[in-house]
Image 1 (spheres, rainbow, N blue to C red):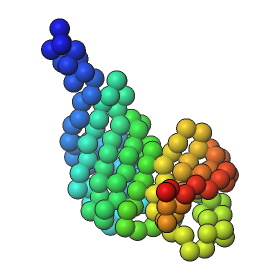
Image 2 (cartoon, rainbow, N blue to C red):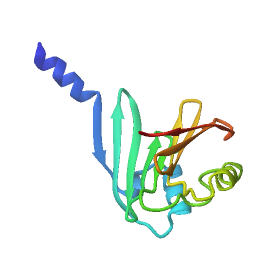
Image 3 (cartoon, rainbow, N blue to C red):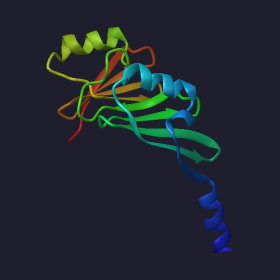
Length: 139
């Protein structure tokens, strides 16, 4: 009986390496628009409980996660600032005005909004309309 439980657990999570052209078209367009000089070094589709998502790593160190439609859910530039346009202009202006030394390098879609990492352990929380909510600091 334990064998079957393990077998079904393995079946509910399926990972598969992909070529760039096998990513959803929206994900391909996003990468081409915001990271035109980078190449995809790794792409993987993960199917868990019937939902697909995608993880992509680029040659410049960026890691991007996409949902099954190819919409980004996380962009982590690790070594550089997020490309202009990923964060809407009003939110980017808020960050530049209130945190002038900050360089946003990571953004995550969260339930009900967005979380932007700006360095020094600081994260800025925005609602779903990109209105600033609060600042958090990691310990």
